Image 1 (tube, each protein chain N blue to C red):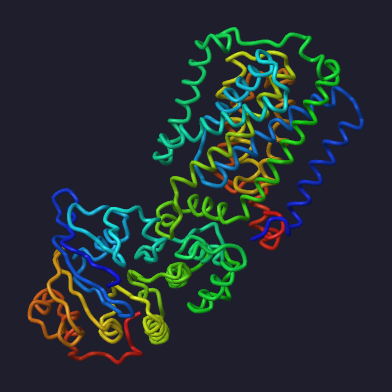
Image 2: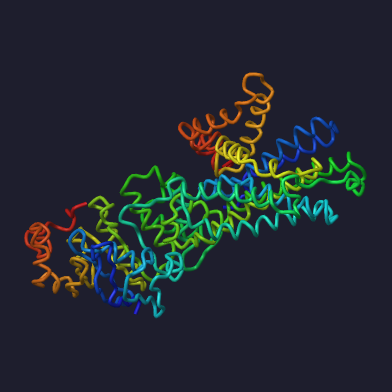
Length: 322
Length: 257
């Protein structure tokens, strides 16, 4: 039951920390940018997994929390002069509260109907921000270069952003393990397997789903704040890309939904592949087609994803790694 | 009184599945619920457990009104059930399945305590050897037993069993009935739907007979078997009527699996 006694927990955390610290120590800025993108997708995938992987509800609107939370955090940094860490946490808090509100409404739906509703939420959020003057409407917000001064210049600010991203990834992975092997996590997994049976066994499904949704919403908001801070600006088009939501689902499914290491590996693997596709002359406009194809193949042939399939093949590993 | 059902009714479209059913269940007693197919037995379970709200009437559990209460709230109060069509949590291990029962049951156990309780009930239903297997890989009789294990792990006051004996091979029926008797002796109330007539007549203290959604008889197994209305209800099925009346009844150890 206890996730902290599993070698897989420590293996995942230590590898992640070592890779991140390695990038910091090498001090290479282009490597940092690559690592930032990967780590960002890893956090998006792992946080989606808290909801999709644990409860089995497919959420096409995960990026809403990246967008709205990121907007909130960026607004606090750029317009209210909040420190970055506090703004990121506030963005996360707002996203979680929003998720509770949205969740109470749409988590009554199940299956495909729920998935459709999440697409609707994404479009609604985009239109809202497009027309919300405080968030700069369709032109968005930008950061004055002087804002980096309080962090000791732009270069240091970018390293700080990377370090904070690494910390949030580590917190997320720890939280995932803690949830997965807790009573709460068992309740979520039982909802995934059979919601009606879970309810007749005493699992308060509506509350559990809503809490999982809120936890899953927190981390993309933190990452969104960091990402937009790093870029120095935010626009509705960047913040609410439906395509990214789909790609994050592909990452989770590729690595193995419901496992902890799976979505991280899926994110890194898919991100490498995407990097190749985007730079190749043949595929550069087709990478979403590719994502769709990968998703189809996984759902048809390896529904448990890479890590899930390995665990199934070698049941003893499940205890250690799953 | 463990359970008081008063004038409970439920219609699905034009079909009156349960109409005006009332009965009381006392602690530490085993009740058999019998009736022809489609008599409304499983619907009655769903009404008691909160899976579907009744159109009318009330259900009180240990003095508390639970009419229309969500199934997970009912479960927390100490009312557990098994499903006729098994619903294993397929991608979880057998042990985890039992732990769901222990964690979200009456005591809301956690950690090592939940695990101990889960192992205990798996031992009780004979699934201990399968504990690390995924529930989906069990065969049907094993899944039936898993249903029972999960329900027991919740430490209920009242257990609703929907055809659990159907999951057992005939040599296991006797020991299972012993287990149920022992549980009842410790104060557990059991209401069981069963088609293995010899078994239910043998184990029940009281038998309730449902026909076309109405409770047509209630009493000791002997009283019910002699009740002309019950015989009439079963007349369409000579073999069941014969079994009920004890005519040409096979011996216990030859009970239909």
